[in-house]
Amino acid sequence: AQSVAQPEDQVNVAEGNPLTVKCTYSVSGNPYLFWYVQYPNRGLQFLLKYITGDNLVKGSYGFEAEFNKSQTSFHLKKPSALVSDSALYFCAVSYRSSGSARQLTFGSGTQLTVLP
Amino acid sequence: SQTIHQWPATLVQPVGSPLSLECTVEGTSNPNLYWYRQAAGRGLQLLFYSVGIGQISSEVPQNLSASRPQDRQFILSSKKLLLSDSGFYLCAWTHDPNYGYTFGSGTRLTVV
Image (cartoon, rainbow over the protein chains, first blue to last red):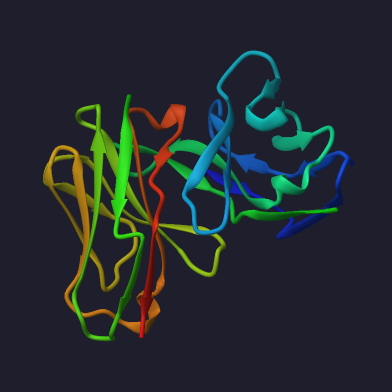
């Protein structure tokens, strides 16, 4: 069965420091991986995706993620955190369910707090 | 360009009352449509998805139902709300999940 895990419910980092939000996955076949961000009382916004190619993917707002096939990970990173980066972050993987429709499965989310 | 609309943004309803939340997509045709619920600002629970008019798949049996009366319209309903139906409801669409979803802005439902 396909799954995605975000092992940390909460990540705190000081402004200006690098940040990492962790994600590991389990899928059969080649994964399609995504990161989304959610601000309070808002919908999820797309940050970046990995489909194929370069293992380092660059996305919106200075975020990047590294696909590591051997460790089945897709960690989200940013070299210098901003207070405005504080939000809920979701990792997701595309898979085919028991029916005919392919869909995304989401991790449980990681609350990132950047401290001034 | 494609846009997705959800309304209302917030809703307070008494226990036992009916519910109707609407989601529409503009600027595209034959989208895959999804309803999610998010409790307490945490994980997403897939409730329903649809790959075409009249085609609804339910992921979790519960007090809710979904309908797709038109190609770009997805409705979430309940005949009698429960306190446990409170949460943040999100609609999403895509043509191909391999390229991700686009989410609506969500509806905050409070059942009192």
